[in-house]
Amino acid sequence: DVEVAIKVVVVGNGAVGKSSMIQRYCKGIFTRDYKKTIGVDFLERQISVRGEDVRLMLWDTAGQEEFDAITKAYYRGAQACAIVFSTVDRDSFEAVEKWRTKVEDECGNIPMVLVQNKIDLIDQALVKVEEADELAKRLRLKFYRASVKEDLNVNDVFMYLTEKYLEI
Ligand code: GDP
Ligand code: MG
Image 1 (cartoon, rainbow, N blue to C red):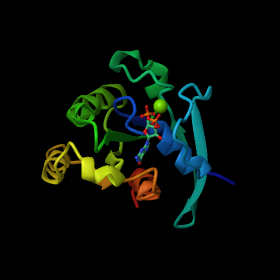
Image 2: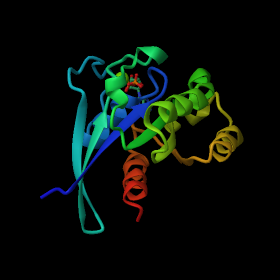
Image 3: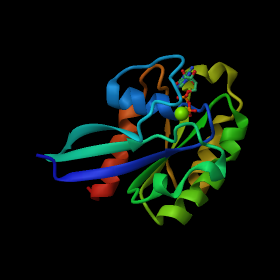
């Protein structure tokens, strides 16, 4: 039986791969054209972390990433957060700090992680390696480079948030 349930919000500009990440983590699949209006608020996955059964509920934005379009209900009660930007979308990188401030305003000081997705497209990168490292350092965020497509580091992101939340 599950004792701990954690609401995780996944934020970031449109098309960085948030829905794909949630789908990858919870269903184990990747599709090129994931339907934005999946019609559910969240997908969930149960994991066991050092003997502790945890239910992660990953909340999707349903394509409303226009900054102020995301409702209060989306953030309400969130206990952890992943901020995602894309290797090939400069604007999404520059929006990271704004997203962090937004989440802090809505949720307070919850465990957060920064994710650079689409690292499989590194040859076309619009964000320099040092720039990303620098931002993570300045914002004091644990930082992962990931590829939802190649299933690289996706599990690690949510494991980190879980451990951080459980303080283990
Ligand atoms: P969202 O708007 O942030 O939810 O982004 P989506 O999950 O809808 O993804 C936007 C597009 O990026 C889709 O075509 C995905 O297939 C694609 N995508 C997501 N993750 C990756 C990745 O790691 N690598 C590549 N090359 N494409 C990805
Ligand atoms: Mg989406």
